[in-house]
Length: 329
Image (cartoon, rainbow, N blue to C red):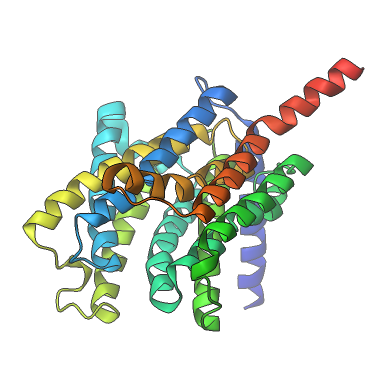
């Protein structure tokens, strides 16, 4: 057992050392900061379409949607990788350090599955408020995982984002049971770790790791859909009409946004990445307003304004302060 502990310790040291080396090696052709922000904004806009798609599949639960959305996401990503790399596609999977591949794939799959699980244990508003903690987790962990120390502006923006989501969801917030709260906490933790690993290993194309995570989600949600969803066929049980919608949802709502997000992570710090992703909370009801005439509440407008302000502070705050310091000098 002592030998096993020593081996784990040495493995962890190698992982940290290799990660530090990769985090400082920028690949040729990496986007600039402004382009990275635009890519992440595009990714967030794509993710926010989830509610639009789900509206057309009222007969499905989260397990079924998560199962086949993950499958079609990964099929599209695999096709994308073949189109880009050709016969070097599987070499791109092998190029990624194994700890990085397993971590990104595992936390993507875990986050997707835990989100569905949390909704069965706590209210949607509660899960949304807790989900806003991802920038906080990124701020706390990024000095160790990405070697980036969040600035005061980033911390202010992270706290503001949590406040904005709380304003939007406050009417529906309830403490729920402790199990539901704990499971819901693992969702933003999973997203923040996944984001930080994309950032840490930005010298690699991490899309293959996300692709692996989608296939893992397919199998996991399919099986758990039988255990917790009560479907004889588990999460795999979907009719042809819904399958066609999910085949469209996977690429549009996940595959393309995740390619953009992974690309943006090469240029944008982890805390800012997770903060920009918080705009999903604002855009989701916006599409319902524009498409179905569901007018957002006053709290949604106010909370959305706070979130927009938080994202603006995260994107521009440090640069404005740095510019003023140069002028003062």
